[in-house]
Length: 442
Length: 166
Image (cartoon, rainbow over all chains, first blue to last red; front, side, top):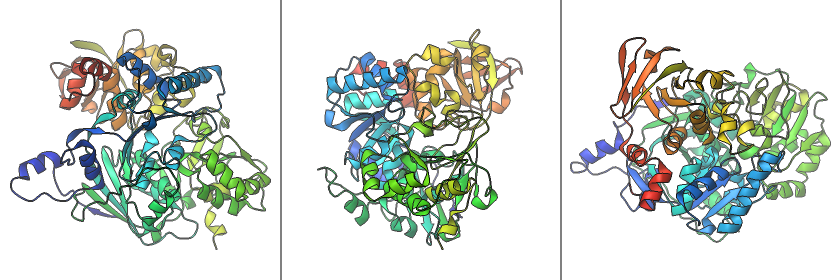
């Protein structure tokens, strides 16, 4: 890892002092998007009130946002075409309390015209970009911390709480501190059996759970350029796990091709200036990175897979907003095709959306997985957040493609969650223990 | 306004799953009922300790990391937590706390021991550790947040101004 020392003191005040003296440096992606959405010449450290292009909430957060709107005395949303509520975290409802929350959301949709994604549609962070609700150059907020996922398609997207979400739903605006940016560059090339999940877990291990707090990360380098949009989303999705406000990437030909047929909004890609100023720059050689595992009970408790190979597992989980996309299901199906899940292992699979579920059926991946012994559950978040569909037992180890492994995360404080790539999970459920997937990649 | 209460001290990187587990947060919007589970993963007795006389939740760095759940500051409020004092806070939790009316204070929490008697004067910007007989400097709120708090939180700010007036 090479670290470039911090180039400037506190950016905004420093720049204000210098404005009359020296020409201003260029802007990061974050500074450009905030400038365009606030009508100001925004630089890191500035406080701006900005227009948001979209606002999202899920079933754990929307009911509180709806209550906040009621307390504000607001009856409408600023633009029903720019607000969506998704039932994904506990869906279909496992208990009457959740059913009541879902009813609150449906009634809000009827009253305001906001788009409702009901049970079975999938995970919010797949649905919002998949439907073309956000396009490159946008600014959006969601009442879910993994809203940073759409940074992979050049959207400044960030997680907020329910009250901030309500303010944005009411007014189409929110206040922001324009973040400093950290530039993370992956040079070299991914080795066979190593995936984008390993890159972001590696970063978490290097900089820790608060390594990028209050900052936007910009991901660059030949390795990012080579990744599919699916694989890029895995990286941006986990930017929050190092405290970042966003995990941004440039929009390239792949991004624009991915948007073909996804709605009518026109992408307006935003590149950073060549002389943009970063609070910090990190460069990694991806060629030297192997499969990574985040061990219980912290996402930054990362080690190379060699250190945990052989750890027995009772459950595997493939899915979530991190790794429930078509490419992820394909990677697992390719490994499991013609093989069997170990007799002592439950292997739970959830596609990130109904569309991915259909595409995976069409491609035969679902058949491959089910024949190998996988249990397919409704597209959604359930097992990852411990609401239903696969709560582990006391003392059990789980290998999961999710983004968090905090104690109790999957619904049992006495279970142990290990995080890895879809390939690592697929290889591990065959052997009933954590297994290096590179054996399946020549 | 001065708040006097005991310190209940925990460590670094306390995430919102520990403040209120996902298995509870999705069940209802009744924060009183949910509050009995506050901090349960770290200290199953937290609610019983803090509820009767109130308390300050004292932590190290990166308090409130993880999810955006606003239930986290809300269950702390309903468990009678008077304020959270930490070295640093995670971004979303910090905003949520201000928006919901839970005071959050950045200060050197190495100067506070578990069980210490503290007096917090938010308007005066002073934290006194009575047990150890020292005053602890507290970092002022960013002006935009101080303005939101002065209006009584984001909901009240919206009611008063009909939108953002920052």
